[in-house]
Image (cartoon, rainbow, N blue to C red; front, side, top):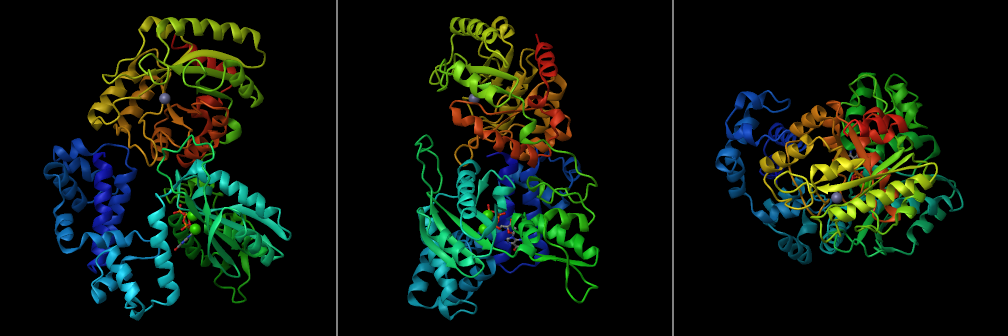
Length: 590
Ligand code: DGT
Ligand code: CA
Ligand code: CA
Ligand code: ZN
């Protein structure tokens, strides 16, 4: 784990443990804030902390004196004393209790104080004995929810990948729209914001026949359990079929919770805004409403001076933002990261802007599509350019091409291109960046390629410093156009490299290299925070599907959502450029 992420995780635990000891709000909030900043920072703080440069560290926005002291402590002693002291006071099992949905620090503290519950096993025992029911605010229903959550946790492996949740949500939206009486249906929550993983799926509908909607929702075939079925909200657990078997080695839950909320036609916009979140964005938006002497909630936006309580706006999200004097914020940007305070928002990239894919594999290495099949799909998508970039020789398991085979492939692609209308197909390679940062073919061969995507595949456990050095060397190579999936991470499976992104971005700008957002939902690499930093620095970005199967072309949306979360504007994305601009740039490196 990188220094920053490790520190971020420790600060989160400090915040939780402070709450369990009943510390004051101020300290808890400070620790949570430090955690969030560390998680999102793109500069590796380890060198600064190690050299005890507190001046440089406090200069970083959001890092206070006391946080900086702790970071230096962590870098020099491997621990933070506050964390050690709290850990000595608090049983480890309490931290696991906090992970149970519906159990917050207040309740955990109460159960600890009153019943000496210090672990999940203790909790199960006390629930069975009936003692938990004697605690304040512990009704039968709350206890039932806790036992259900415990069973669910035992059977699931965490959050669901964006790319696995999206088709389920789309299917359910369609299913609900087909029900008699439904007038609107849409998914909200983290899915609509395009987050890389999804805790549960939130669906909103309007209907003239709530009963029919509830019945249709709870009777879907994959429903394994009905958690709630009230007038305005139903919750189910839904079985995920991994029919393709292609992803069976992923750690992913086999079920997901889905909440259906039936809202009134008049409150649609307010409800959609509320349930889209993020929570942080909602809080910030409500504060703005208060400044305007208005009140915002899930039912509407109200003028406080108007005692009849007629909403000012509530039928559309756009109406609400407009009434508050704001640009409509695209859902992926709703993170409380400046989208409400920066004046006018930039016009961010959209799916329809993409005109080319520049990282695809064929049957010549480990792809399942032939050159012609892939070209046909790309042309049907109205792309003007397709780059074939099969694996290089070191990737033996991926059937990487030896120099002679690559030379042959270049010729085949150029000949094929001459015979194929309305699409330019170029010959490239996804060249391994070897552990020492050198590339997997000699310069002469690299210069014969129309495009070079350089990517790390092996040695992904390297220390941040080595990773930075390795990737910087690849960026500086004059034949390289794109740095492919820069960290090599796989979401919820492999952490990958933690290079200093600020340095990589600066080097990419200097050497005119594009950093890739690999759109595969297992990768999303660059991640959203990296994209934001890159876009701010004016760094070129590529969004590629890394196509191996026909269906991979559909992953583009996940790359776009990630780009949108990073405020990427289309001009910086080379896949949006017209034919001439793109090919002139590609040739400038030859
Ligand atoms: P998830 O499900 O963990 O991936 O993340 P979300 O963002 O989908 O969160 P979820 O499902 O708990 O709630 C959906 C949205 O509802 C959330 O993004 C914002 C809104 N919401 C939920 N609880 C609260 C709350 O306590 N305060 C505010 N302001 N908004 C909330
Ligand atoms: Ca959710
Ligand atoms: Ca939810
Ligand atoms: Zn790759």
